Image 1 (cartoon, rainbow, N blue to C red):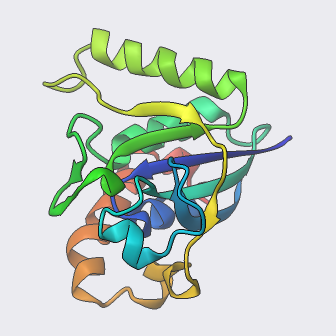
Image 2 (cartoon, helix red, strand yellow):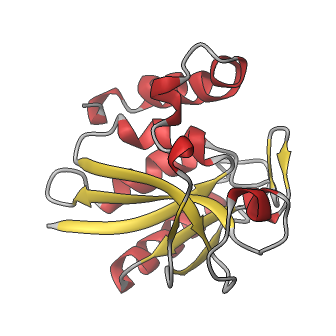
Length: 176
């Protein structure tokens, strides 16, 4: 069954590269969501002027990769305990956020956060926001499949590749 969810865990270039490597994920689109500002642009979102987060919208086949596995990848790919920040990227546009499209995703997200906090997986409490996906705005074309076309760039080497390598090591059983 094909389902959709959106995740934000810092710069969307990083999360896009991670989820494109997961089997059962058929499409990953970088964009903006999480606020009511209509027709946001990269300049307005990255400047912190909209309230939207940089997110990726994922289409996946839940019979191949269950939502719980996507959540595991999501939490392992970024630091869900830093409020409005991932590495050098800071502001509400880089917040940790899950934008669900059905009640099952909402319930599983909230349950996983409670479990990770109870198990003390992180030294601080998880600050990931869990809200419904109302409207997703696709980012400009040059943001799509960014890592694939820019693997040698400094940002790709210093930020994206380490996250991708970490996920590949931890979740090798989920790779395409």
